[in-house]
Length: 262
Ligand SMILES: [Mg+2]
Image 1 (spheres, protein in one colour):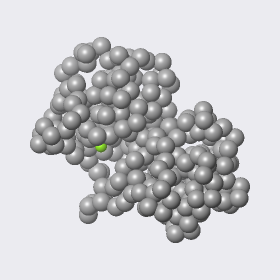
Image 2 (cartoon, protein in one colour):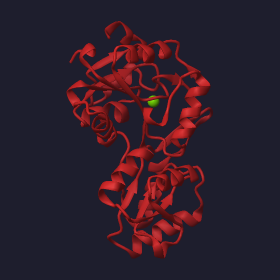
Image 3 (cartoon, protein in one colour):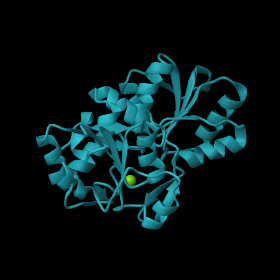
């Protein structure tokens, strides 16, 4: 697998292209060079609490021009999945207003009434209430075959002071109450890279996933049959890499090293 043969570059964002609010020095040049060479790239994120518009604004603030089309978020991937498997169903969304808006934009009916619900969607809900946990538990316990989908499996989301519970932790709380686990859409599942490849018509042999977490970013790439490129500019240390059962195809100090390989 040669980098120069790759046509589609799927980038994780935090830890890969920037760290918090600090853009890495190579990021602009890397994205511009990919464009110049006629290669495609998308930004891929598991975070379903923010809308694509929020991410467009965040990148703009960092100095990177982007549009809706440049993203594959777990919210977008969840909408694609729902179109295929649960078209027309009314959704109870345990997620932010941003996630609800994204799903409405895709044509789905979002309801807060359990009696109108056909399908449950869990997101990274930074607006979580006990009522939502109550309703989801009620639906799972009283309707054994109700479809139950989660945007992402992350247990925690990093913040400036440490971590806060993410979608996976809330799903774990619901499992304690109901015994049910959701179908999970985001990384490490292969769905996001697969949808990106389908969308742009590029085969897995010419696709690479670049990220700073082995157990989500790299694994989603490997699960989709694409090349996995780990960067050591974020969460993963050499020690974590040595202990990981999943090995990337390539390990770089940071994504800036790709510039010399294109
Ligand atoms: Mg990351």
